[in-house]
Image 1 (tube, rainbow, N blue to C red):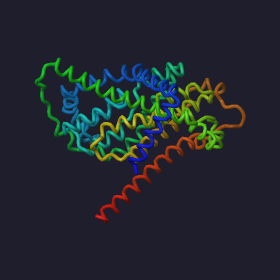
Image 2: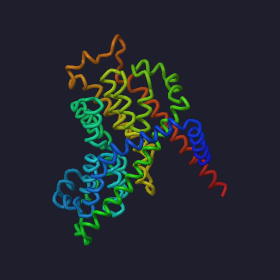
Image 3: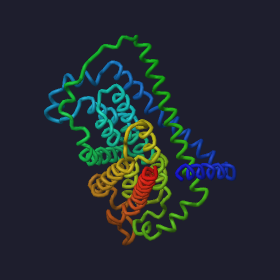
Image 4: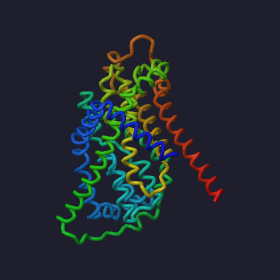
Amino acid sequence: MKNNLKICSLIFVLIILLIFPEPIITATKTGLFTWADKVIPSLFPFFVLTRLMIHYQVPQLIGKLLAPIFKYLLHISPITFFIMLMGLISGNPSGAKMAREYYDQKLISKQEFQGLLYFCNFSSPLFIIGTIGVVLYESSKVGYFLLASHLLGSLAVFICCYPYFKNKQGANKVEIKVPSQPFSVLLIDSIESSIQTLIRVGGIIMFFYIISATLNVIHIIEGLNLLLAPLLSASNIGNIDPLFSGILEFTQGVTKVSSTALPFYIQLTLTAFIVSFAGLSVHTQVFMFASDVDLSYPKYLGFRILHGWASALIILFSWQFVFTDLQDVFAPIGNSNPTALSLLVPITLGIFGFYFLLRLINYFKLVSFRKFKTTD
């Protein structure tokens, strides 16, 4: 049944491509340019650098030097902490990629690996400050504010994931071995590994741009606007397209949100949610590194919603203290002053609907599997 649904969906997209080739090809080009212009320059240096650090065992060295701090104070492995730090600096999906490489080398446990995949979903600080802040909103102050909300919001996820990381013995198993290969060999290996990962990431990004264009062509977005009109009107959002695009692919979403005529603080709130939720494109990239690990997508989705909610609420309740000179300019007209609840209701309803749909599918799969075993 599940495979039949996938086949029908693929045939449907193919038919749409044949009937409406222009918007699909345009979306593919946009995804390709986004990958080439934004993703490769920001991720390629970090991919190569972190791979070289793995070869030269920089995390193990740091772990040896700071072992007492990790063992007695944080109770986590120094390698786990290093992956978190590098994932934070370099952005998605670097944290997941590093976690996979250290898990393959048996330097972190399966439990730590699962926790890192749940937690290490950071957008690059350079992307938030430079692309979103400076380019889209023409203000580095906006970029730093969004970055602060993104990092503070991640603390809620860290608290929930901490049981995965707790490992008092992690610092004891750190060993340092000098690599025997020449630097040129290790550099080439790092470059090849990075390019391979970037090609996969680029393909996933373009795929979700195609899905977004297909949904627009068949007027799904218009249907959702009509269906959710009361909620969108109460929240002063008006059009669900920017948010829906962000749920699919966050770069496309934040670009559309910044170009809307929404009040300034609503733009920032939606942007914060989209950046922290990361989009289904990033979710797919993360699960690309979890092919043989029992990672629960409903749980992963719950953590992404939690991160998005936390970041959005931080923006919503603190923006007026940061942008004191802009309150009067960007204040909503009339009496339509949405509360935090009304603003985030349409965001959460759609995503939780998707969450419960996944749970329902998993339930029926489990029931079918039990019946099949009983029959045997």
